[in-house]
Length: 113
Image (cartoon, rainbow, N blue to C red; front, side, top):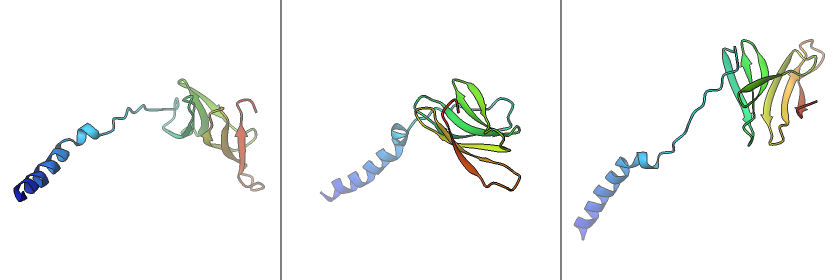
């Protein structure tokens, strides 16, 4: 009986050690690059595959859908940042006026206003 325990304690861990790839998750990565930008960062994605994010050089917020990037800028603001998008396509984010008169404000964009 002790020999069976020794065999089990030796063989079973070896089986798991060599079978890690069988249980490994497989992922597919897709690069997302805003046209002409040096840096692209994503902040959210919804079930329809619409994504929101921002880019640097040029710096702008965007909504991306089906390979099309639509810039998103709060009217009159010096800077707009997006945080997330829901399954209805509503985007939430922040905007700033760099004149010192207003702190950061939040917004919700529903696709038209």
